[in-house]
Image (cartoon, rainbow, N blue to C red; front, side, top):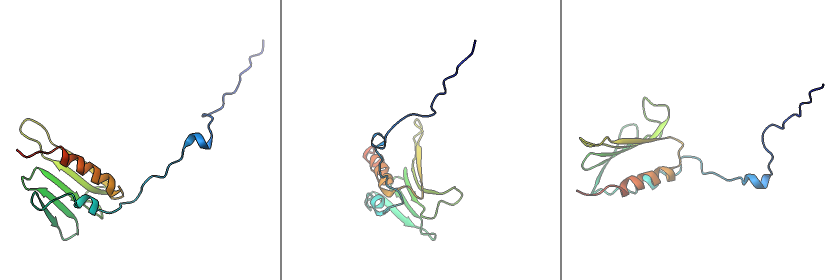
Length: 119
């Protein structure tokens, strides 16, 4: 009795049309799209001696840092968003690398700002 094995084709079959190639936005873009969201009435802006930009809310609970050359002590962190928690609820932070498009960071910042409210 002979055993016959039918080889299976690796992967899957497709066409170029089925793949639907896309062009994705890459590169850091324009940081002004992020920074223009902050009003001097509600936020403090500081540019340090490395040309890093720091934005704090007047109450000190929101922080945004932009590090065009990378945040010191990190592996290419270009943006950091932090919201300080309360005694009952922990805060959070988000970070993006130096090559994350500013439009993506701007959308995240906009959403964080939309969820805040005056008390």
